[in-house]
Length: 333
Ligand SMILES: Cc1ncc(C[n+]2csc(CCOP(=O)(O)OP(=O)(O)O)c2C)c(N)n1
Ligand SMILES: [Mg+2]
Image 1 (cartoon, rainbow, N blue to C red):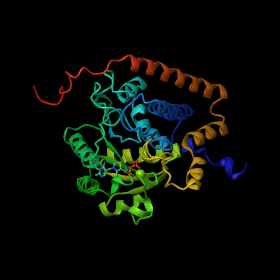
Image 2: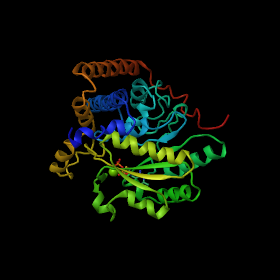
Image 3: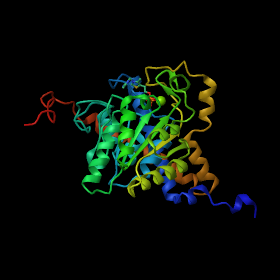
Image 4: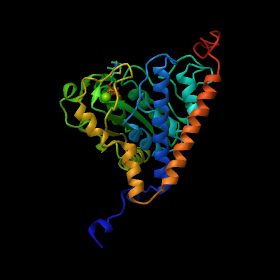
């Protein structure tokens, strides 16, 4: 037996079953396929507003959400649709939301950006970047005060982690040892500004020392690593050891949004990251370890396509809001 044979496969070390890996693959692939469909609707002029996608970052969103417990609360941003869907929001709700239809979670009063699902522990994104860190610190404080066994998980971009809110929220949560996990998604850019031009640190995990909490950097395109470290951070928080700051090293494979051709991103950099695509990597891992068959993959891809086709048909059939409901849920009766 060689030393390679004697090592346990990484998914076994992380406590993941083949079924877990296939489920994560499903949600990553569903996220990408749905965003591709949305992009095509945008190009046809069938939806209004910007189209922001998470292409290349699905591994971080899906694997971190997969590590959460149902009673946990998360605050996904625009690159975290995979987390929203892994927590159970169905494609039809997402598509109706993007199309501004009554059937969407906000009843057609917004399009893509600001919807959550409190029943599934998903806070709606806030446009002011960094604001979800103190918000999630508050959610964590409330959980502790109410005796709930729940952890708050906030996602933030590399750019968003430079805001005052981020530092205040982190420090507050650390001082009170609140059950909070923060994932900084270092995707190389904040709009058109490369990371090397907006911070002087090597790793966003290094910031943790300033708050007195652990900081762990992970390969954001390796679902097994993201799952394992997020789960460990959630467990630390759950047993009362306080916050953890995680950095996910990943890459934004498209422009900031579809109106941005990202011509400022060097082509070689995109090509290098394409080699590390999280979906292809997991497919390769499943092949290599014999954890699925070509038929399993085909069946899954067919199911995703059918599901998106049917969801889109349902969303298109859902009416636009009539205007009368515009102020609903805004003012107290
Ligand atoms: C406090 C604040 N400043 C600026 C903006 C404008 N803005 C929206 S997205 C964005 C870039 C965000 O970059 P990053 O946090 O790295 O997230 P990414 O888009 O890469 O996921 C900026 C500057 C904002 N929404 N909020
Ligand atoms: Mg970024």
